[in-house]
Image 1 (spheres, rainbow, N blue to C red):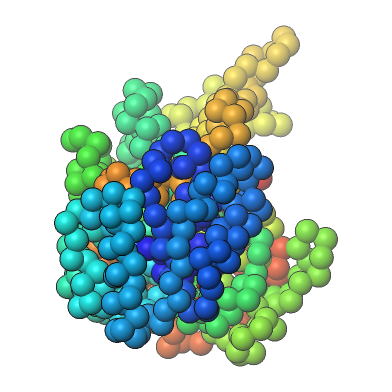
Image 2 (cartoon, rainbow, N blue to C red):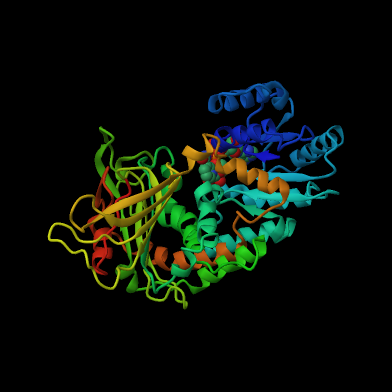
Length: 482
Ligand code: NAD
């Protein structure tokens, strides 16, 4: 059951992903989807929408009619109890028509204020009363702060146990995010160096070119810290910093990630200025086009105090990471769309190849998450010719070049994981709670102190000057992302 079946997420991501699973045989023909949304639609109209959504994102669509025939529509107000009874009847009927053995997945692809209500109704009105498995897939944002996340979690947990809840963080579905673990734990050359003796700092960047678009109303209440740092950025940091799990099971991996978040040094009060930088974009030129500043966007307060950019320095207080800064930055209207991780290794003890024109570059391991997917290792090698001089070289691995164009999209992988009951790449409540308690300390201060210097970066740049100073104070600089 997809709640929010006429929405943007369902149309752009969920239907095309389900179709790919169907086409590859990962989804058998024993399945049915009930689309739930407010507007009245017939099954036929809904099926036409499904076909349109699949066709607009996939070239090959040989089995589209057969696929769409599995979709049913239920017009529904999520706050109306009677409507759930009708929905349950339809679900029971499809259960027997398609021999579904009482297995149900509920996907909440709608505004977060409804998540709690829907979960409560699913239980009260008997929809979770099934003979097979029941799973709840829930989109971000999971709460607005720790308290609201806790309330939402309590509501959900009346109807579903923790291992039945699949909290989506679509970054965890990305191929190269999943690759972080493999790079670390399957290569003898990295793991011995993966600590404070050999790594000087780590930089995680997730930049967007887009502005706030038509999401102004939501974004005004959220901002970059809640929208990106609480979930995606901290999840990437946890994967980079965790200890090797004993086994690759959901429980083992999650418990190692939780330990990282527990070791994350809380930043509060006056320290926030030392460790975090916030920004808001002004007008500027993006890809040759003049664009508005954040405060001029639709549904945005002309004196808005909301940050569209965050840079921060994280410290993980454990034996492995003591003293190694992990810098993160994320923002809208930056000069490139890119998610990248740079691991900078410490300098060698002594440089034998010094020349006045060139100094030795540090070794970098760059993990390209999106749009390119791959790894680059920056080394120094001998310059061709008579002299013994060093020159930087790059070893490059591009994922798409090797595996072809068929890297599955995040949502395809996550939907498949959920169907198989593998929750590894979803966030556990403990991770959500720890990351909110880290972020809350910062957002409490930012909300109550007006940023006097907003807007402080032009659209189409890499963010405010203070974000560069954050690293310069420590003797580092941001490595370019393009
Ligand atoms: P949307 O506004 O496009 O769609 C909302 C859907 O909910 C529609 O189908 C609408 O009919 C339905 N709906 C609204 N009120 C209803 C009610 N009272 N009863 C029944 N149905 C109702 O939203 P979206 O962009 O698809 O986002 C859905 C969720 O996914 C949100 O939690 C959002 O934060 C999250 N999300 C979206 C994207 C994305 O790319 N769109 C990405 C990440 C997360």
